[in-house]
Every structure is written in C-alpha cells, then in structure tokens.
Image (cartoon, rainbow, N blue to C red; front, side, top):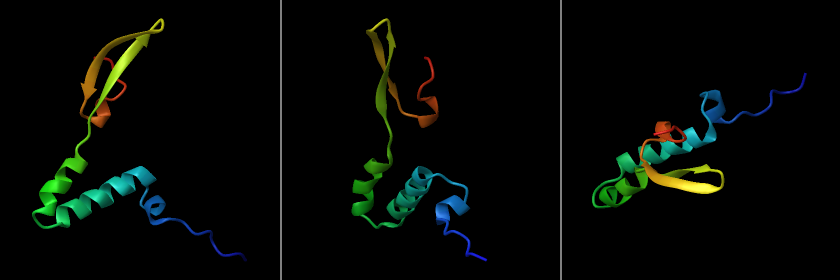
Length: 74
C-alpha cells in the first residue's frame, strides 16, 4: 500500500492559497507592536479602479474597495 499523498495545510482547512496567505498576513499584522503596526495597517487595505468596456470604448472608472463588489455593475 502506498502512502497518502502530502496535502498542504490550507487545502485540509478547505481554503485556497490566497485565502490562507491573506489570513496569515492579517494575523502577523495584528500581532506586531507599535510603531510597525501602524505602518503595516496600510498593507491590509484593498482598492482598485474598474471600468466597463463597450464596443472598444472604456466607460467611466469606479473605485472598488470591497472585493465582493468586484465585477458587479454599478
């Protein structure tokens, strides 16, 4: 009988690698003492601009600050 293939801890937990890394980074940022904690707080924020394209023309840009809202029409 062959041994079971190795599985990463994040797969066992039912997460994607990106979810695992984001949670680990958040844990590290929350454990750090001041003054580094203030500097690292900016790394946990998320935002980008998105624009819809129609017939090869870029529409107005909207800022996305919540990942769940990405790709949804506004």
